[in-house]
Image 1 (spheres, rainbow, N blue to C red):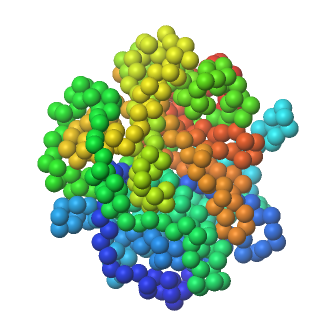
Image 2 (spheres, rainbow, N blue to C red; image 1 turned 30 degrees about the vertical axis):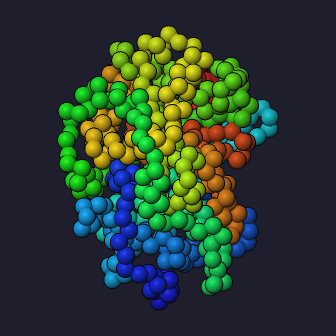
Image 3 (cartoon, rainbow, N blue to C red; image 1 turned 120 degrees about the vertical axis):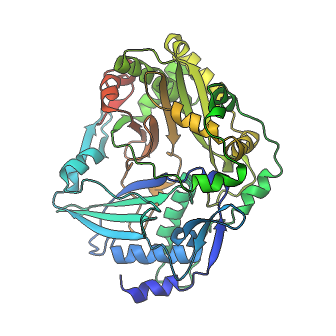
Length: 470
């Protein structure tokens, strides 16, 4: 894109220091990402063109999200900040890529009894056979790499993949998807220089601090659990040094042993009915995964782990007076520490009930306590990081449910994406639930070692409801 065109947008950015909240800095080194697969159903030669997409991106950054081109630092008060310097912007890394194979080569297709034909993008096959062995991840460790965008075009194919990677320290999943939709909205309206977003973001991080100043903290049960495991002996840091410690954290590499299961809408409802029709689909699914992953874990390591952990992130915007359009991090974790023998012996109905007892504790009082924990008892965070994995000692299912986020609405002027896929994401044991608009079911992306998945994909209990895609 010509420099003059970029300057038209970026020249309006003002110098500013944007103070980060505690939950922001706790995510430093991690990323939020996405892969959106669009199908050209028009004769428009400029379909998803990099020039138009980039123009829209720079307009939305300049007008609403200058934090994207800032750099992390420690402020005079010891707090973490993003410094936006108009003379030293951290420019996004944007590129067009071409693959000498059709996109369909990387699709997995399933035909279901109700007549639905569903396509899935096999990312592992893409990296093996496309000539692109990896996609860059957002990082502050390299200049101009804090926001990564790739448009991937394929030979003789109507499909284009939009890959995005951003630092988690400035956005959680809700805020990132809002940014993507706002970016698309600005792109659709580029011909109107006076256009303003219909629902602009709330960027003032102070709204979170002001709200939680009115809340009395209540410690969630899982905090005590990790303390009892020895968290307090791991790391002791003066509260004033927490920002410096966390902003010096290394990048967390994405986990590359990714797998995909698909649940049709009918099978998902059957699962809920079979487990406990009084519970939600998410709890029924969590119960199924908690037990089957534990069984696969035992087969993999030839031992019984002491603990089976279940983790649900939750968006505290729904439980506070902070606006839903708040653009920072406001997601917390609810964790159920379960004795593995209890999981193995229990029915799915009993497992769902116990998970609910732990993971429904998602009030703002618990969230306030988790903020305190990061600021004053950082060892708990480190102990959780050690424990939440699949190993001889622990089994782990972390379920991030993003299917209600408006990803299918990200429309740059040609309609929303036909297929949603997940880039590689961090941490073994984590799982992501995406909606699949092709048949109304869900796609479950699973991060587990290949040898553990070999056992998991043979589970008769899991296969009664799920289709293994890759």
